[in-house]
Picture 1 (cartoon, helix red, strand yellow):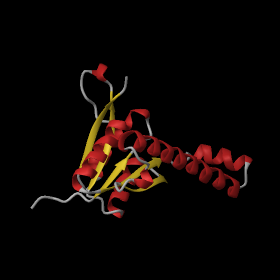
Picture 2 (cartoon, rainbow, N blue to C red; picture 1 turned 90 degrees about the horizontal axis):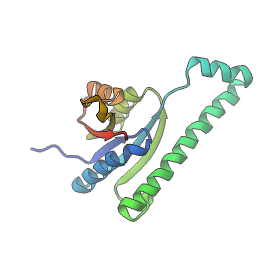
Picture 3 (cartoon, rainbow, N blue to C red; picture 1 turned 90 degrees about the vertical axis):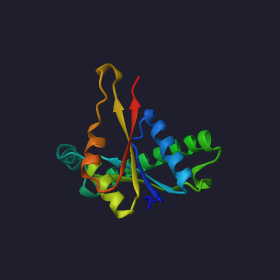
Length: 163
């Protein structure tokens, strides 16, 4: 019996080069009748940055500033998704049967991606890796490498070449 792909977790860093990775996720979702859950993981504030914020702001103001920063990333992600879906599918993500949700979560990238894949019961994780053709060998990015090591679910790594 072949495995079913009904839920795809597409993890993105929102980089300009991530279109080929999203195209791959869209193609698989279309082929298998799957839904895509998009995820961007924002690294948590370092202790030094948190200390600096709390030095000049109350704890409540610092938490509010962090929350507003995550909301800006969510808004940016939705705007990029909308633009991409318009260009690739001829419709917005809200009209696409392929996009189930868009999430921005604070945490360590690889650990958060694999935990969310388990929480969401994803059948496949799709990630991109940045490669530099001048290196002569394809090197797996650190997040993609960690996801493949930590995940109990299949991971598709799509190479993304920087120009």
